[in-house]
Length: 250
Image (spheres, rainbow, N blue to C red):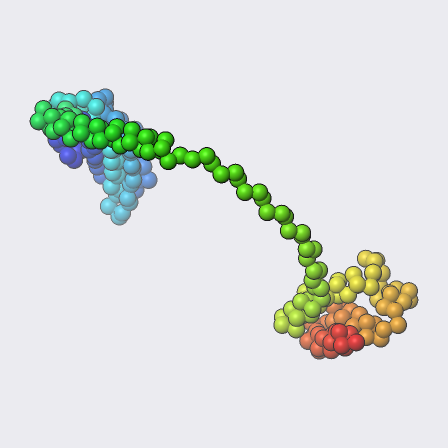
């Protein structure tokens, strides 16, 4: 067991380091009894064990801060374990450590007088400056101007609705996936007022596409691309894009 530093003042910190080696691979040491640390504040405790082919090295580092002055002896740390040499329970102990703790650092008389000589003029300057600022503020203060009237609110212009179909068609031309085809299909069916359970034949039967052959062609081409086999998907997307282009041109 070691301490660093061994000489310090009240309020400063030291590191108490406890090291143990055992001829067995372990993750932690049990049955360790730390010494009485009265007169110290514990600021942290770090433990670790490193294993190798020759056993384990375990280290515990405690950060301490003395609260009282004087020479203080830290008693040994103890470990209760089975001695592998004879198989009997044994009591192992580290060395003790003596720490010299001086009193807290106090300013001497000369330093205190110097501080008084510096602080008193500064305090006087602060008081005089505050009084001068208050007098100046009283002379130059004027009646506050009335707050300006708020500007009239501008009329809110409703945003122009954006047609999602051109963006969906552009995404289909760019990515050419079945998910993009289905997105275009959902938008076309929404435009003609298709119900969820209606098939393409149901839409044509009730003339949902009207008399516009371009609309009917787009619906038919997109429907085929939505459900065609994967091997024919690319060609079906080409047909759907041509039909959608004709619809926009019309």
